[in-house]
Amino acid sequence: MIDEILTKANEGQGLTDDEFLELLKIDNDDDLEKLFKVACQIRDNQSKVIKLTSTVHITNKCQIQPRCEYCGFAEETSSKGYYNAFYKSNEEILTAVESIQEAHIPRVSCSGGYGYKGKQAVNACRIVKENSNLEVLVNVGGDLTEEAIDKLAKLGADTVCCNLETINEDVFYQRKPGDSLNQRIITCKRVSDAGIGLSSGLLLGLGESVEDRLKHLRYLGNFKTLEEIPIMGFNPYEDTPMANEKPFPLKEQLKIVAVTRIMYPEIRITMPTPTVGPENVEFSLKAGANNLATVIADNYPHEVKGVGSPEYGNYTEVVNVIEKLGLIPQTI
Image (cartoon, rainbow, N blue to C red; front, side):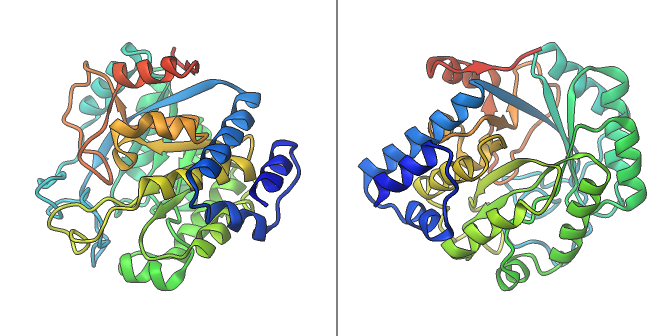
């Protein structure tokens, strides 16, 4: 059965939900290797170039209350995260952007907490576009007004990220009681309507089912400018309400990557190095990913704490892994 499904996938035939579920429920290592091989073939037929994305964390002052149960990014949520509140000045953003360009990393993610209606995102995008030739991704979740999205479009923002994280409403509001799933969906629609590339992904391990994950992947196809799907596995941050929960298994995370590649052959699949673990970057690529995020070079001027985990991928080490696999790191 698995061989037949993978043959269909490799030939570019569409799979049914039942067939995708069969792939997501693989528990045999041999079948898993076959799944990953097909996913990589599909990716490599498009391109062997792997995009690298660095980051500028604009602010960890987040006004969502109550806090998301897993968050170690916002101020005073975790002693291992960004505990002390900060808001990067224009000069600090600029020095980070300059260092990323000097390191030949082609893309920067500008991300921050809620409560600014996109003003901090617009400001950071302007700084990037006026002072570099970097691609820019903006990620402040659903905290974007129509006006802010319009300004981002006029500035030439390449991508706007608004992760739904899970479309199971019960799980969403259990883990994110101060957030709004509907507002995130509205933001995704507004980004698409503005003609900006949309990034929207899954946070795995919040309590959702395998069926929920498949439904979520299908749902993302409704957004016409969808170009990127981040796949993130839950990791517990100390001092948070989910601190004692188990991390989402790497093998299950990689299965989602491979299935996403089969469902969306041309999509950019992003693995943030903090959530997958810098030591597991190789496995992400072997499962069909083609963008590695939170890649930080030695010349970076500010402290970085990864979202989902304090650790992050070092640029030199990440590039070495990419080249070892016969893939091509995108640089500028």
